[in-house]
View 1: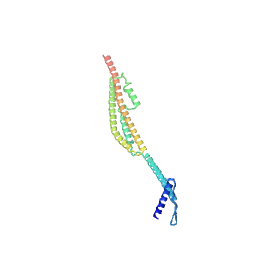
View 2: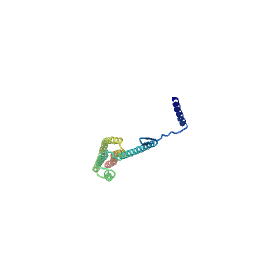
View 3: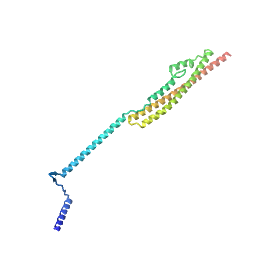
View 4: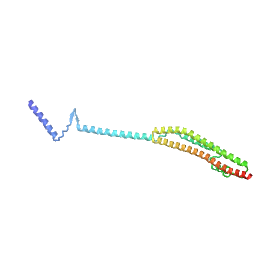
Length: 239
């Protein structure tokens, strides 16, 4: 009996091995348990469908997350820079303009300059009395001294503005480095350009004031030379 059982078992295993090696597919049969039919292939198909549906849901969630991140970045790009140095820069420009407006005797005005030069420099009459020559010479000397004083005041104002500009540069560079969006970075850069323009304006003002002083002194020297020749002529004529 045992020998016959072993033979049947061995024969069944041999048949199974032969079918597998030949490429046969063994499909599980439907089972009925407690009156309910269980189909393994249908069960596997349902699991595969559920897995694919879950994958699609995960992809949709990722797309929504990417869209939310994009919206957040766009909102950051629209945020304005919380720091503004415009008022300080305008104050520095106004102070420099005030110093230029305080020019003594001969202002930075084309009409005033032309009128004064005609009266005391270029068109000064050398045929007048000695007292008139002395008055004109003294006026020209006062023009030169006042112009050099004005130039020094403008230069001092520029130096003061340099300290304020240094503070503004530090504030703007820090704000630019911590900018959360493109708009904030661009606004910080624009304010740095405005600061540079203000510094160039101060430099131009200092050069203009210094040039004014030098030109007035050169004009005074030329007028003094002309008066010197006239006085020497009168001296020789008197002798």
